[in-house]
Image 1 (cartoon, rainbow, N blue to C red):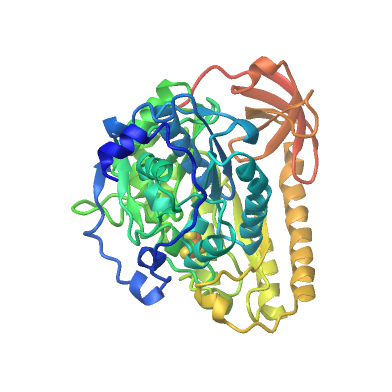
Image 2: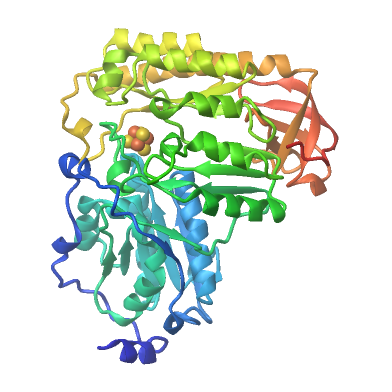
Length: 506
Ligand code: SF4
């Protein structure tokens, strides 16, 4: 069938059950550390997104639904895919029964996250049987893994579409192909990835916005699948980011979070000029938006210039999330984190000197293969030495295709669990300690909405990322308000509403 015939039949074509017959091996290349490290700079293409005229109106009368798993990067990818769907004429729905297309935007960071997706595919099977015209797709990080795709091919024939993190901009073509094809449409492999600008977005709410500043990661921490699923580091051009932030500021957004797997590597791949995250933040701080954050940092690439710029404050908040993963230099070496305990502590000392009121938070993995009690205790002592105000803590979970997954492990699961509990006790202790001094103070809170626990209470975050609950009229949702703190819990503050903040101090 040629393109013209496909277009003519596109709306009318009845669904036929999928019986994959292609040899899909051509789409894949198993994760290879050796090959991935040969990544070249010159191969990144900067392109503008546009929808081919032949696909316009493809979604008229149809509805889409996207279920998102995992990190903020995925949440933002979902905003982009929603933008593409709406540009094609589709309407969003949250009801699986009325959706014509359902996408699962997946996460590969932990086995547990993958199992949830397979469970969801199982739940959706009866729906697909009942409604064979429904298109069911899997995208996100899991679809970049060969083993996952093979499992879907073998076991989940209700899936019509699999596409990867590099191929979101191809969604119109992929959908068109799925409507036309009898076979599962797979579009996953692109080991490097490009930078596609001008993608439409449907942002969730009008208060906080996420802005990608770079894609991919070249760090290759031994436990992490991201460099394989998200491709090599590639930075957006500064002018494109600045323009996007300006537009968001003009639309009234109150907080911008710059996104990347390793934002501190921003600009390293830009040819012909010296420009890093510090330079970008220095330009963004002049834009009339109240708060700017970034995530996620890598200590190795966190440079002095960035610290100097963050110390200028204004709309650059006093919160830095700085994943350490372990407090043991020998463990950090096995994790290939490329810094030592001493180097991390030096960095923390520099940050604290430049920004004395900074709130530092972190990520920690416990029970990495062969972690000794002494190594774990070094993590506890580092936590206390830094005085982190909060942490995301995890038990190590092996990811197929990563070097750490091949390591033998002599640490029993009950020991890992016990270490996690001990660590979490310290996390709670330090969180409580950080929150107590707020009692009696007036803090600025950006109001997210109703509290998850009580609809009569509003909740939001301070610049230093402290959760504050308080009662106030619902009209203040989406605004910055002043709240007098009355009470400190282990992980949050309670307070009394004072007034709305009108001014943007930049
Ligand atoms: S820096 Fe982060 S995303 Fe990159 S490999 Fe390490 S843990 Fe994964």
